[in-house]
Length: 312
Ligand SMILES: Nc1nc2c(c(=O)[nH]1)N[C@H]1C(S)=C(S)[C@@H](COP(=O)(O)O)O[C@H]1N2
Ligand SMILES: [Mo]
Image (cartoon, rainbow, N blue to C red; front, side):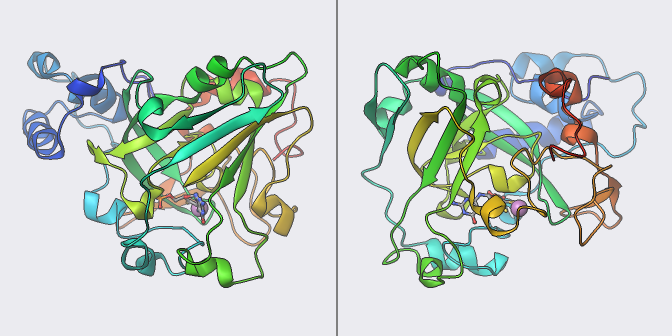
């Protein structure tokens, strides 16, 4: 079994509404076809795939089933609203995301301001990804959005560009957590340019076929499935191409605890806890954490010349 695949690209009009998606999933599950995330990503979306024969070995342990919508939207890390995961959803309900645009600049030939509507014209894809928080819990989230690489290519990076810096919204009137001055707001993050171009790297605009809920980073957020969740910055308003590695919020606060790379790695512990296993939300026992969150086949080559325990 492949550990995962990028889901096939589909157009926005083909994105499965949540109710249909869920009932189809139930059908697939009862037919004994749902053997893991690869089955979901490759088959769950496309009706014709339901007719495929059952898996020869259905007794696979630890299948990656999508986490229920209520957990994905009710248990959130989003410090601009609250450090309490269950308070983020209620506190973010009135957050205004319309109109929204993203400014893209820095070392590019064609800088520009992209209204959300324009970003939604990039080819939309459907991706169910594992999300592993550095705190030791995980979910499986069915996102829809576009590959970040499409946007980066559109602004034509200069040859000197080596990194991408992301900046989230700064608006302490709307985001009460930003009144907590212990954090260097706004939230920011960064990727190396090859990571940003990787086809797994997504800008998510929807979840379970519905527009991104505020608590999950509406109207658009980064998703980098092989890295710890804090890299997947929410409510992005600015993207800059840079020559130097950009500062990031968690790396600035605690560099020895949160590296710039933040690749999921069960062999490199957090200084205060083990990263060898994780609690999948909704499950009773912990499961082992996978190197690169199970996306090793797709991404390991980008780090072949790095010592992962040094560049963590
Ligand atoms: N702007 C912003 N983005 C953020 C965060 C945040 O506090 N602010 N938290 C991060 C962390 S630690 C995680 S685990 C994920 C959680 O995403 P989810 O709530 O959609 O599951 O968002 C990440 N993106
Ligand atoms: Mo996290």
